[in-house]
Image (tube, rainbow, N blue to C red; front, side, top):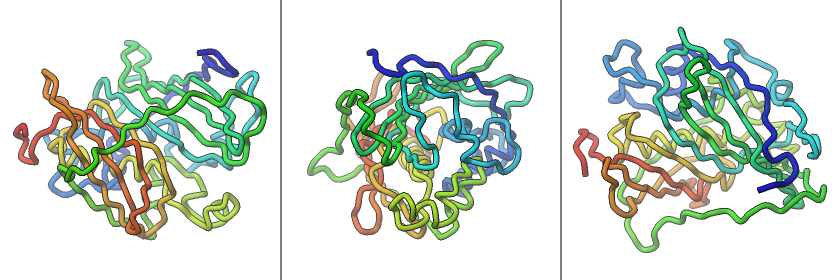
Length: 309
C-alpha cells in the first residue's frame, strides 16, 4: 500500500536493560508472589515478562528520568505534517513474540528498528501506524515485531488518506468466559508503571489530561494492555513466558486511577499442533465501560499447574 510516509524508516536506536528493569516491570503490571520466575532474579527459571518489549522504545538506554516530550520529537516524516507529540494517545497495539528476551541486554547489542506503515487523516485526529522490531544487531535475530497506531488528538484535516477499515475480533456472544481476572488500580498505579521509562506527564499530573479533554490524570494505556497480557498468561498460559505467541488489543477508553478492571477471556477454536490456541478477551472498568477492545492472543493454554487443558 502506498501513501504519505509509507515505508519511511526511522534511524535505528540502541536499547539496553538490566535484571532490575525486568523485575520492576513485572511488579508494575501485577505479577504475583506465586510467579517468582518474574519477580526473583535468583529463581532458576527467571525470565523477562514477554511484553516488556513495549517499554523499550520509551526507555532506550536511559538509566534515569527523561524529558518525555523532548524524547518523542522524532525525525520528521516526509510528506506528512509535523504532529504535536504532547497530544498523542495509543490507538491499538499488536505484538508477535518471536524469541524470548534475555534477562539483561549485557553482552549483546540490541536495537529498535521502526518504519511507517501508514499515516491516516481521520478528520478530528491523525493516525500514525508503525512497525517496530527488537533486533540483535550482531546476529540480525528478530526478537519481537510490533504493529502500533498512535492517535494525534485534534490534528487531522490535512487531506491525507482515510486508511483501511480495521479488522475486529469480537468476543463470542452468549458464551460464558473461560477465565476472568480482576485488577484493582490505585492512585499510584501510573506513578509506579512510569518508572519503567514511560514518563509522559499525562499519567503523573492532571494538567495535560485537562488540556486534552480527559478531565485529569489517566493511567497509561500500555499499563492496562500489559496488565491484561499478564492476566491472560496467568489464567490460561500457566504464567509461562514461552506460552505467549501473539497479543493485541485496541485502547477503547481511558483508565483512571482507582478504576477496577475486569478482563473476560474466551478460548476460540482448536489448538494447533504445538498446542497454541486463539484467545479473545475484553477489559471493562467498574461501570461496565470497555477500556480494551478487539482483544486477541495466541496462547498455549494450560492449567495453572502447567498441564494442558
